[in-house]
Length: 81
Image 1 (cartoon, rainbow, N blue to C red):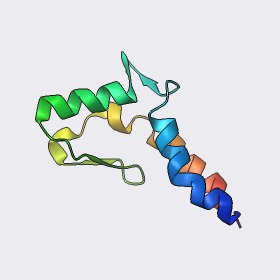
Image 2: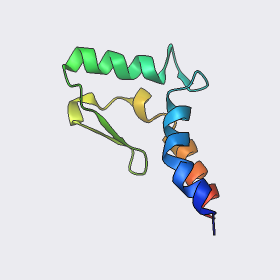
Image 3: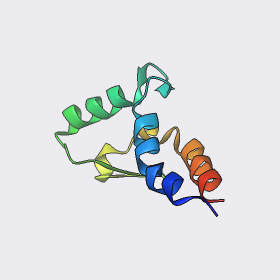
Image 4: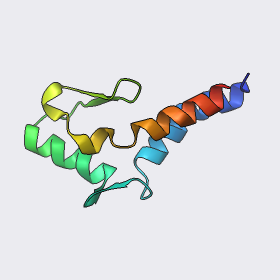
């Protein structure tokens, strides 16, 4: 079982990793893709479900935003175990 400290830090670790310069997809970083989608769709409240590979609202769903989800699922599994 994972320690409480590691479990509590997991959401922050995922958020930091998602927006870091290590997560690059095709021609931009994840933060750039997120900003681009928000500006194009005029939707500024975007949720990304990394467990189910979905983005809400649906019109914001692009491949770039869910490209790293499998890596995050692996990270979650490692911490929980």
